[in-house]
Image: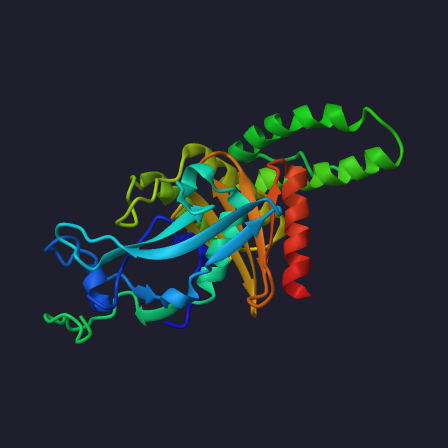
Length: 131
Length: 174
């Protein structure tokens, strides 16, 4: 649990997450109805900790925001998305490699470990009280 | 120039020698300081090639981890992570060979969630992260966990990797 969270584990936007308003951390181990990733860890971050804005080479202005994007079997599903001048962009196709590495590092510094890999936890059945 | 011993009976090293001999011609073209510097690099390259054929046991896990990445499929992280490409794995392997010769073992070798291979070095709060992307590019991040991280692109030659290793050592030991 003390091992740092490394950059290789951090995706780029559109980054899929589950929103804590609607889900407990252990719910992230599910795929559909299957507790498929029962031995995976779970990490989290506050929406306010998302690196919200990055200038790069003094030219482009990227912003990053969380958006609730419910799926058919995953209502808590949300995404961290990237915007260029207010337009949602395909990061993989448009974002400079150096910029996204900086963004991932800034996010990594704010991540919190919620469940350790292989940690056994009780799967709560009811949604969080705030939902 | 001090050449490594060629009096080796091992079959795998004979293969390595055949590969290395082609380099000797390039070394003795010029004279003076340039030749000396290039011969020193060649010594290193020879050693890297030799060690790549039979790496020490403590490096087995590192190379095995890299080899295992070829078995990953798309979506290996349960989301949209592309599998590491052959090019990314090959570039990472070349870098590991040079690391081996330089006696600098990485802390971590893993597939990258954005497609490629990530190699991490850590010392205290400092880290150096080298990412071999599926598109063939290689980027390096230097971070102390506090200040703005430095990111640059790296070339893929032996010389580039030697430079990167020196930078990594300097940064982690600073």
